[in-house]
Length: 119
Picture 1 (cartoon, rainbow, N blue to C red):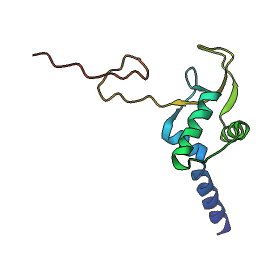
Picture 2: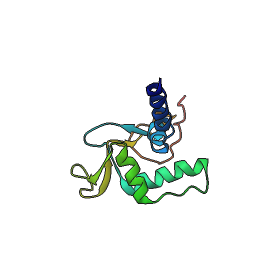
Picture 3: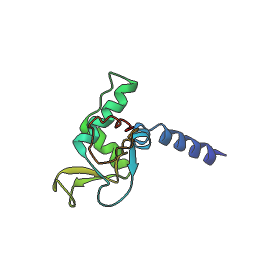
């Protein structure tokens, strides 16, 4: 009976982990090229995510790195693709933003408006 309670407590703590919540909500996980996220951008995004819930949230960069490494995300230099040598977390990246107008041309964060219908 004790084993089931200990397992339930572990599952609860894991579900309450803010790093996992952030990754499940805003990131997509995977392996290989493209599934790495620059450490400084990841830190900024995580803090912004947490400040939506608590405007006074604070976390050191070292604690952030340690927390993600504890979940199994490797921290190191980018070895493939663009910006070689930059420090990244490997195994996740931001989810692509859905474009409500269907403009999927890789334009990034540029605001696009629907094309007027031709009559």
